[in-house]
Amino acid sequence: MRESGTDIECGDGWFDLLDTLCGRLQFHTDLDGAPRVVALQIREKFGTLRFYAEGADEMHGGMIDVAQAMSERICRGCGGRLPCLACSRTLAALRTAGTR
Ligand SMILES: [Zn+2]
Image (cartoon, rainbow, N blue to C red; front, top):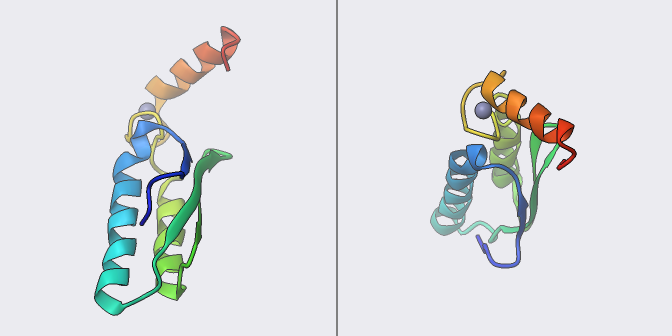
């Protein structure tokens, strides 16, 4: 897992999810001699995580798929369960203020 040069645009709420994903991707590479996964872009799209990577084999792909699916249930603002009223209010306020 190479972190440098990766474009990461998402909230802190997904930190544990991404940290676990990256750890498991590397673990599979180290243990099974699988290809090294390089994250190209990590971002939020339509409220869910999108993890674009190259070098992922079938098992890596499955891990990425689960992480992306989990992101639909985790608030990207705070890591709490969705729906998250606190963060949706904050986001709505930011939109109203015209900063987003
Ligand atoms: Zn939240």
